[in-house]
Length: 161
Image 1 (cartoon, rainbow, N blue to C red):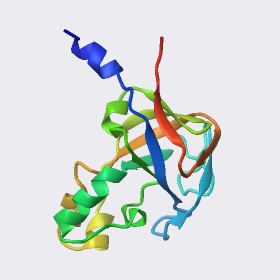
Image 2 (image 1 turned 60 degrees about the vertical axis):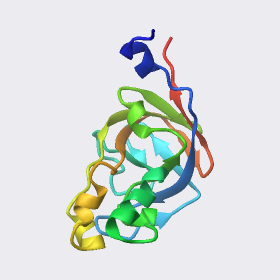
Image 3 (image 1 turned 60 degrees about the horizontal axis):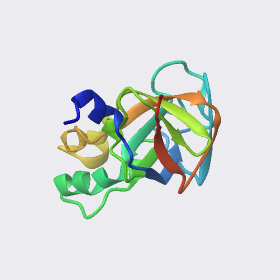
């Protein structure tokens, strides 16, 4: 029987980048892009958080959560740009990346915490918008190795030996 420690370290699933966006400034519309440069100690080129130190250099959300959020809001779908995250990932449970480094294309990121919704979700979706995103807001990460992330890139945990 495997211990919880072993189970936490076992992550054979691979994900895929399904959407990329950057926010050039606070409250600005998201710019949807096919690729983005990520730099250590900097974040994503063109994003409002670029150049700031901290744990929120990159925000990620699970593509599979978009229909859940939409359903909670009584909508058919939700445009990822409205959620203000940088990258949508399908095929891997983002919460399973807790305390791990993971690779997207050339870039290595490190999980730094949950990405909770803000009051802007209430403005965007109306009453209940904030609570619709709670528990589905994704994760924050910092850049460990610089490079380019592209649409369709594979996402995988970096397993330490």
